[in-house]
Amino acid sequence: MRILFCGDPHGQFEHIFEQVRRTRPAAVVLLGDFDLSQPFETVFAPILDLTELWFIHGNHDTDNEHCYDHLFYSQLSDRNLHGKVMNIGGLRIAGLGGVFRGQIWYPPETPRYQTKADFIARCGKGNRWRGGLPLKHRSSIFPEDLDLFQGQKADILVCHEAPAAHPHGFAAIDDLADSLGVKQIIHGHHHEPFVYSDPRYVNVGFRGFYEMSD
Image 1 (cartoon, one colour):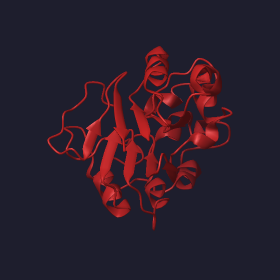
Image 2 (image 1 turned 45 degrees about the horizontal axis):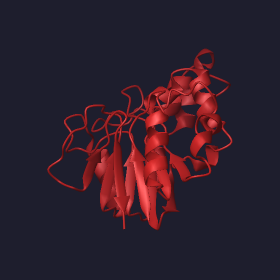
Image 3 (image 1 turned 90 degrees about the vertical axis):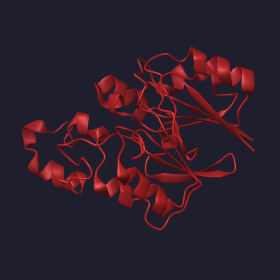
């Protein structure tokens, strides 16, 4: 079974289609920052019959309401791995989308808000979007997002943010990986892929790929 992990596409998708047609992976896991101009299922229609698609969101997927709606309200929104552990290609894959932001939580600093409800209650009615979180913060990581994984185990953690071994990474990602018992962390976000000395960590860069097969 082959699984293809794809780095941030930022509106460019043909390279993904070509790779899927060439290698025919059982599943594709997309690591966020889509910049979708059309609904997710429309953009990825060329390969929907060729493979199984899964994704996490990145910080740019809440840049505007079109990017947000095209992803989070697509016909394939149930393929969002954020806060879940799913069996994909025989592997248990956990997903954490979004980024740490100082207004919410920027580890190792103490979180300013534990939950989305806490932030909504204090942000002021005029700052709410569609009656809830401001659009930008719908891609912010709250401590409660990590709490979703309590008691779960996985083989791989896919995330947008990087672990502590990256120059711009976070130990909170390692802590989550340890609690899940994962063997590998695969992340996007950083476009120039950082080469880790430890093979447990993989940074899939802009328009990059990482393939895993049994």
